[in-house]
Length: 91
Ligand SMILES: O=c1ccn([C@@H]2O[C@H](COP(=O)(O)OP(=O)(O)O[C@H]3O[C@H](CO)[C@@H](O)[C@H](O)[C@H]3O)[C@@H](O)[C@H]2O)c(=O)[nH]1
Image 1: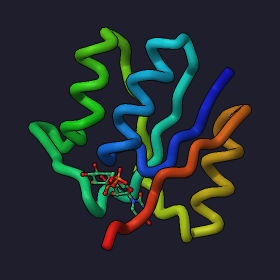
Image 2: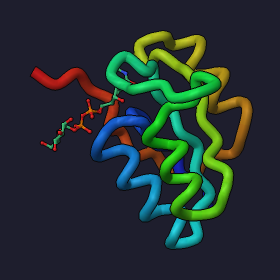
Image 3: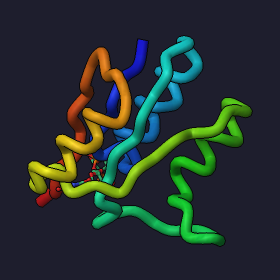
Image 4: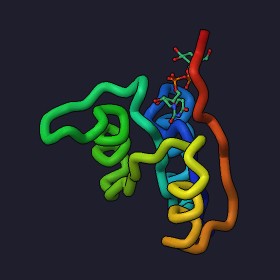
């Protein structure tokens, strides 16, 4: 089962991705990286740490969920069984 997580590089998102991968789910991470810290090579630090903790690659895409076409392309790129929507701008 493949789960799409929006806001995956955020605090709640990255912890959710970690738990999903440890539970055996395939995960696709989406984020516009408006509130994410990039590490070496530009990869988001939070998702790099999830990859280190799980020992598995963590696929992610840069996507603005307000961009309908970009979002459609994501859904066309893979079979997605469930969505956990955590992308938001905190106050
Ligand atoms: O249109 C948008 C807006 C935001 N984002 C992303 O969504 C993620 C949101 O994560 P974050 O900003 O970390 O918020 P939360 O995961 O909701 O975590 C916040 O809320 C938690 C619970 O209160 C606190 O513990 C955290 O410190 C606080 O960052 C970020 O990576 C953003 O880049 C998008 O992808 N698209």
